[in-house]
Length: 92
Image (cartoon, rainbow, N blue to C red; front, side, top):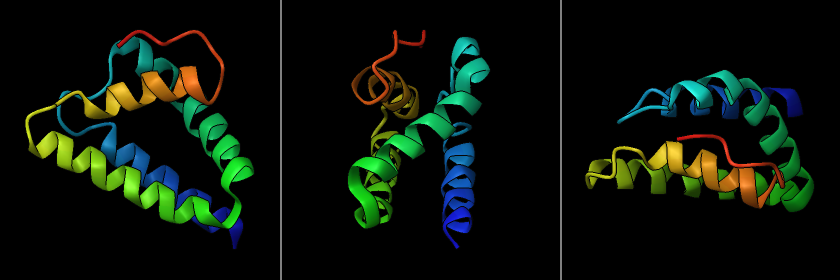
């Protein structure tokens, strides 16, 4: 069951990555790693609340894109790589 939730979150991330401006070439290269590492870290940090938090983040990204911030998902990936994964920022 947990893997179904993960698969669904990854499918949503795949769709978000294609909206608006999309991801930079460098981010596209690291996207598979980001999805796995970020989702695992957020599951660890938030437990059962992660699904609700994920839904809220997705809605914020969609709202930002609708309001003209077409690189909203790219910015999320950049910021979360720094904040959650403690990795050097991926180029936007």
